[in-house]
Image (cartoon, rainbow, N blue to C red; front, side):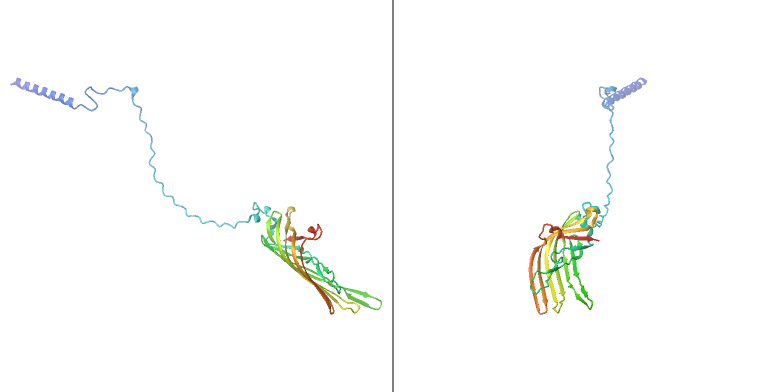
Length: 304
Protein backbone atom coordinates (compact mmCIF):
# COMPACT_ATOMS: atom_id res chain seq x y z
CA UNK A 1 0.00 0.00 0.00
CA UNK A 2 2.75 2.44 0.91
CA UNK A 3 4.63 1.64 -2.26
CA UNK A 4 1.54 2.32 -4.36
CA UNK A 5 1.01 5.64 -2.71
CA UNK A 6 4.55 6.83 -3.42
CA UNK A 7 4.23 5.59 -6.98
CA UNK A 8 1.09 7.62 -7.44
CA UNK A 9 2.69 10.72 -5.97
CA UNK A 10 5.72 10.36 -8.22
CA UNK A 11 3.52 9.88 -11.21
CA UNK A 12 1.51 13.01 -10.36
CA UNK A 13 4.70 15.08 -9.90
CA UNK A 14 6.07 13.82 -13.19
CA UNK A 15 2.77 14.69 -14.90
CA UNK A 16 2.84 18.14 -13.41
CA UNK A 17 6.40 18.77 -14.66
CA UNK A 18 5.46 17.66 -18.14
CA UNK A 19 2.47 19.96 -18.09
CA UNK A 20 4.70 22.85 -16.95
CA UNK A 21 7.20 22.23 -19.72
CA UNK A 22 4.40 22.17 -22.29
CA UNK A 23 2.99 25.41 -21.08
CA UNK A 24 6.42 27.09 -21.22
CA UNK A 25 6.87 26.15 -24.85
CA UNK A 26 3.49 27.43 -26.01
CA UNK A 27 3.46 30.76 -24.15
CA UNK A 28 6.95 32.22 -24.15
CA UNK A 29 7.43 35.62 -22.57
CA UNK A 30 7.43 38.67 -24.87
CA UNK A 31 10.72 39.48 -26.59
CA UNK A 32 11.88 35.84 -26.60
CA UNK A 33 11.74 33.38 -29.44
CA UNK A 34 12.46 29.78 -29.85
CA UNK A 35 16.11 30.52 -30.23
CA UNK A 36 16.30 32.62 -27.11
CA UNK A 37 16.50 36.29 -26.47
CA UNK A 38 17.55 38.71 -29.29
CA UNK A 39 21.24 39.35 -29.74
CA UNK A 40 22.70 42.25 -27.84
CA UNK A 41 23.52 45.38 -29.91
CA UNK A 42 27.06 46.70 -29.38
CA UNK A 43 27.33 49.98 -27.53
CA UNK A 44 28.94 51.84 -30.49
CA UNK A 45 26.07 50.89 -32.83
CA UNK A 46 23.24 52.15 -30.74
CA UNK A 47 20.75 54.47 -32.39
CA UNK A 48 21.45 58.23 -32.04
CA UNK A 49 19.60 59.89 -29.24
CA UNK A 50 16.29 61.36 -30.19
CA UNK A 51 16.44 65.23 -30.38
CA UNK A 52 13.30 66.90 -29.21
CA UNK A 53 12.50 70.03 -31.29
CA UNK A 54 10.66 72.67 -29.29
CA UNK A 55 7.33 73.41 -30.87
CA UNK A 56 5.94 76.96 -30.59
CA UNK A 57 2.70 77.10 -28.77
CA UNK A 58 -0.26 77.62 -31.02
CA UNK A 59 -0.82 81.28 -31.80
CA UNK A 60 -3.73 82.75 -30.05
CA UNK A 61 -5.98 85.14 -31.93
CA UNK A 62 -5.02 88.76 -31.30
CA UNK A 63 -7.72 90.82 -29.67
CA UNK A 64 -9.59 92.97 -32.18
CA UNK A 65 -8.05 96.42 -32.62
CA UNK A 66 -10.57 99.16 -32.23
CA UNK A 67 -10.25 101.61 -35.06
CA UNK A 68 -9.87 105.20 -34.00
CA UNK A 69 -12.58 107.47 -35.31
CA UNK A 70 -11.54 109.29 -38.48
CA UNK A 71 -10.15 112.66 -37.63
CA UNK A 72 -12.06 115.54 -39.00
CA UNK A 73 -10.06 117.38 -41.67
CA UNK A 74 -8.22 120.30 -40.21
CA UNK A 75 -9.08 123.72 -41.43
CA UNK A 76 -6.71 124.48 -44.29
CA UNK A 77 -5.91 128.16 -44.86
CA UNK A 78 -6.60 129.45 -48.35
CA UNK A 79 -3.63 128.99 -50.65
CA UNK A 80 -1.46 132.03 -51.16
CA UNK A 81 -0.95 132.82 -54.86
CA UNK A 82 2.57 132.12 -55.95
CA UNK A 83 2.93 135.68 -57.17
CA UNK A 84 1.56 137.04 -53.89
CA UNK A 85 4.01 135.14 -51.71
CA UNK A 86 6.91 134.80 -54.10
CA UNK A 87 8.53 131.55 -55.07
CA UNK A 88 9.46 130.76 -51.50
CA UNK A 89 6.54 132.47 -49.81
CA UNK A 90 8.75 134.91 -47.88
CA UNK A 91 8.27 138.68 -48.00
CA UNK A 92 11.76 139.08 -49.43
CA UNK A 93 10.73 137.11 -52.52
CA UNK A 94 7.36 138.81 -52.91
CA UNK A 95 7.02 140.88 -56.09
CA UNK A 96 7.09 144.59 -55.36
CA UNK A 97 3.64 145.00 -56.89
CA UNK A 98 2.05 142.61 -54.37
CA UNK A 99 3.17 144.77 -51.44
CA UNK A 100 0.78 147.52 -52.47
CA UNK A 101 -2.43 145.66 -53.25
CA UNK A 102 -5.10 147.42 -51.17
CA UNK A 103 -2.87 150.45 -50.61
CA UNK A 104 -3.10 153.93 -52.05
CA UNK A 105 -0.64 155.50 -54.44
CA UNK A 106 -0.24 159.13 -55.45
CA UNK A 107 0.53 159.45 -59.14
CA UNK A 108 1.14 162.02 -61.85
CA UNK A 109 -0.60 161.04 -65.07
CA UNK A 110 0.62 161.84 -68.53
CA UNK A 111 -2.36 162.46 -70.81
CA UNK A 112 -0.61 163.75 -73.89
CA UNK A 113 -2.47 166.71 -75.38
CA UNK A 114 -5.34 166.18 -72.95
CA UNK A 115 -4.17 167.66 -69.68
CA UNK A 116 -0.56 168.43 -70.42
CA UNK A 117 -1.66 171.23 -72.73
CA UNK A 118 -5.40 171.76 -73.06
CA UNK A 119 -6.27 173.78 -76.18
CA UNK A 120 -7.94 177.13 -75.92
CA UNK A 121 -9.14 179.47 -78.64
CA UNK A 122 -6.81 182.25 -79.74
CA UNK A 123 -7.69 185.89 -79.23
CA UNK A 124 -8.64 186.44 -82.84
CA UNK A 125 -11.76 187.28 -84.79
CA UNK A 126 -10.96 184.52 -87.30
CA UNK A 127 -10.17 180.84 -86.68
CA UNK A 128 -6.49 180.38 -86.05
CA UNK A 129 -4.12 177.99 -84.33
CA UNK A 130 -5.38 177.58 -80.76
CA UNK A 131 -3.36 178.43 -77.71
CA UNK A 132 -2.97 176.00 -74.84
CA UNK A 133 -3.26 175.85 -71.08
CA UNK A 134 -0.87 173.53 -69.27
CA UNK A 135 -2.89 171.35 -66.89
CA UNK A 136 -0.94 168.51 -65.23
CA UNK A 137 -3.16 165.76 -63.86
CA UNK A 138 -2.44 164.40 -60.37
CA UNK A 139 -4.45 161.68 -58.69
CA UNK A 140 -4.52 158.27 -57.10
CA UNK A 141 -3.98 154.69 -58.13
CA UNK A 142 -5.54 151.97 -56.02
CA UNK A 143 -5.20 148.22 -56.60
CA UNK A 144 -8.37 146.67 -55.17
CA UNK A 145 -7.31 143.30 -56.58
CA UNK A 146 -3.93 141.94 -57.46
CA UNK A 147 -4.55 142.26 -61.18
CA UNK A 148 -7.01 145.15 -61.32
CA UNK A 149 -7.20 148.66 -59.95
CA UNK A 150 -8.48 152.11 -60.82
CA UNK A 151 -7.02 155.54 -61.53
CA UNK A 152 -8.65 158.85 -60.69
CA UNK A 153 -7.00 162.15 -61.41
CA UNK A 154 -7.72 165.83 -61.68
CA UNK A 155 -5.74 168.69 -63.12
CA UNK A 156 -6.36 172.40 -62.64
CA UNK A 157 -4.61 175.54 -63.74
CA UNK A 158 -6.06 178.94 -63.00
CA UNK A 159 -4.50 182.33 -62.77
CA UNK A 160 -5.80 185.83 -62.35
CA UNK A 161 -4.27 189.24 -62.03
CA UNK A 162 -4.33 192.84 -63.06
CA UNK A 163 -2.00 195.53 -64.32
CA UNK A 164 -1.96 198.94 -62.72
CA UNK A 165 -0.54 202.01 -64.43
CA UNK A 166 -0.04 205.09 -62.25
CA UNK A 167 0.73 208.58 -63.52
CA UNK A 168 0.98 211.97 -61.86
CA UNK A 169 -2.72 212.59 -62.30
CA UNK A 170 -4.45 209.21 -62.25
CA UNK A 171 -4.08 205.42 -61.88
CA UNK A 172 -5.42 202.84 -64.32
CA UNK A 173 -5.92 199.16 -63.49
CA UNK A 174 -6.48 196.54 -66.17
CA UNK A 175 -7.27 192.88 -65.65
CA UNK A 176 -4.87 190.52 -67.33
CA UNK A 177 -6.14 187.37 -69.07
CA UNK A 178 -7.23 184.76 -66.52
CA UNK A 179 -7.05 181.33 -68.16
CA UNK A 180 -8.65 178.32 -66.52
CA UNK A 181 -7.88 174.74 -67.40
CA UNK A 182 -9.58 171.76 -65.83
CA UNK A 183 -9.02 168.07 -66.69
CA UNK A 184 -10.50 164.88 -65.26
CA UNK A 185 -9.03 161.43 -65.84
CA UNK A 186 -10.18 157.89 -65.10
CA UNK A 187 -8.46 154.60 -65.90
CA UNK A 188 -8.72 150.88 -65.23
CA UNK A 189 -5.18 149.46 -64.96
CA UNK A 190 -5.02 145.71 -65.52
CA UNK A 191 -1.85 143.85 -64.55
CA UNK A 192 -1.40 140.92 -66.93
CA UNK A 193 2.09 139.84 -65.84
CA UNK A 194 4.26 140.21 -62.73
CA UNK A 195 7.97 139.94 -62.12
CA UNK A 196 10.10 140.77 -59.12
CA UNK A 197 10.35 144.51 -59.74
CA UNK A 198 7.86 145.27 -62.51
CA UNK A 199 4.40 144.50 -63.80
CA UNK A 200 3.12 144.65 -67.35
CA UNK A 201 -0.04 146.75 -67.58
CA UNK A 202 -2.86 147.36 -70.01
CA UNK A 203 -4.81 150.53 -69.15
CA UNK A 204 -8.14 151.48 -70.76
CA UNK A 205 -8.68 155.15 -69.96
CA UNK A 206 -10.77 158.23 -70.61
CA UNK A 207 -10.32 161.94 -69.95
CA UNK A 208 -12.22 165.17 -70.41
CA UNK A 209 -10.90 168.71 -70.32
CA UNK A 210 -12.25 172.25 -70.51
CA UNK A 211 -10.58 175.64 -70.76
CA UNK A 212 -11.81 179.21 -70.66
CA UNK A 213 -10.35 182.69 -70.62
CA UNK A 214 -11.64 186.25 -70.80
CA UNK A 215 -9.59 189.06 -72.27
CA UNK A 216 -10.76 192.46 -71.13
CA UNK A 217 -11.26 195.02 -73.87
CA UNK A 218 -9.39 198.32 -73.67
CA UNK A 219 -10.20 201.67 -75.14
CA UNK A 220 -13.91 200.83 -75.43
CA UNK A 221 -13.31 197.46 -77.12
CA UNK A 222 -15.50 194.54 -76.13
CA UNK A 223 -14.26 191.63 -74.08
CA UNK A 224 -13.19 188.43 -75.79
CA UNK A 225 -14.34 185.08 -74.46
CA UNK A 226 -12.14 182.13 -75.31
CA UNK A 227 -13.04 178.52 -74.51
CA UNK A 228 -12.51 174.92 -75.54
CA UNK A 229 -13.44 171.44 -74.44
CA UNK A 230 -12.41 167.94 -75.44
CA UNK A 231 -12.79 164.30 -74.63
CA UNK A 232 -10.54 161.34 -75.33
CA UNK A 233 -10.76 157.59 -74.93
CA UNK A 234 -8.16 154.94 -75.60
CA UNK A 235 -5.78 152.46 -74.05
CA UNK A 236 -2.14 152.17 -73.14
CA UNK A 237 0.23 149.27 -72.58
CA UNK A 238 3.54 149.26 -70.81
CA UNK A 239 5.38 148.52 -67.61
CA UNK A 240 5.24 149.82 -64.07
CA UNK A 241 8.74 149.50 -62.64
CA UNK A 242 9.26 149.54 -58.86
CA UNK A 243 12.55 150.63 -57.37
CA UNK A 244 12.70 147.69 -54.99
CA UNK A 245 16.08 146.74 -56.44
CA UNK A 246 17.52 149.75 -54.59
CA UNK A 247 15.36 149.30 -51.49
CA UNK A 248 12.62 151.73 -52.49
CA UNK A 249 9.67 149.64 -53.76
CA UNK A 250 7.19 152.42 -52.91
CA UNK A 251 8.42 154.46 -55.87
CA UNK A 252 7.36 153.32 -59.33
CA UNK A 253 7.69 154.73 -62.81
CA UNK A 254 5.23 153.84 -65.52
CA UNK A 255 6.24 153.91 -69.15
CA UNK A 256 3.48 153.26 -71.67
CA UNK A 257 2.55 153.62 -75.30
CA UNK A 258 -1.02 153.86 -76.47
CA UNK A 259 -3.63 154.93 -78.98
CA UNK A 260 -6.16 157.67 -78.26
CA UNK A 261 -9.29 158.84 -80.03
CA UNK A 262 -10.06 162.48 -79.29
CA UNK A 263 -12.71 165.04 -80.16
CA UNK A 264 -12.38 168.70 -79.30
CA UNK A 265 -13.99 172.08 -79.96
CA UNK A 266 -12.71 175.62 -79.54
CA UNK A 267 -14.86 178.76 -79.43
CA UNK A 268 -14.29 182.48 -79.61
CA UNK A 269 -16.80 185.23 -79.13
CA UNK A 270 -16.78 189.01 -78.75
CA UNK A 271 -20.05 190.91 -78.65
CA UNK A 272 -22.14 189.60 -81.53
CA UNK A 273 -19.21 187.98 -83.31
CA UNK A 274 -18.24 184.36 -82.71
CA UNK A 275 -16.78 181.31 -84.33
CA UNK A 276 -16.14 177.69 -83.40
CA UNK A 277 -14.18 174.73 -84.69
CA UNK A 278 -14.64 171.02 -83.95
CA UNK A 279 -12.06 168.35 -84.76
CA UNK A 280 -11.63 164.58 -84.50
CA UNK A 281 -8.20 163.03 -84.14
CA UNK A 282 -6.73 159.56 -83.70
CA UNK A 283 -3.17 159.57 -82.49
CA UNK A 284 -0.56 157.60 -80.65
CA UNK A 285 0.81 158.87 -77.39
CA UNK A 286 4.32 159.21 -78.81
CA UNK A 287 5.53 162.63 -79.85
CA UNK A 288 7.36 163.42 -83.07
CA UNK A 289 10.85 162.94 -81.64
CA UNK A 290 12.61 159.71 -80.62
CA UNK A 291 13.12 160.97 -77.06
CA UNK A 292 9.39 161.57 -76.79
CA UNK A 293 9.10 157.96 -75.57
CA UNK A 294 10.81 159.14 -72.36
CA UNK A 295 9.52 162.70 -72.12
CA UNK A 296 5.87 162.25 -73.08
CA UNK A 297 4.97 158.80 -71.75
CA UNK A 298 6.37 158.57 -68.22
CA UNK A 299 4.22 158.71 -65.10
CA UNK A 300 5.40 158.46 -61.51
CA UNK A 301 3.60 156.81 -58.58
CA UNK A 302 4.46 156.72 -54.88
CA UNK A 303 2.64 154.09 -52.80
CA UNK A 304 1.89 154.42 -49.09
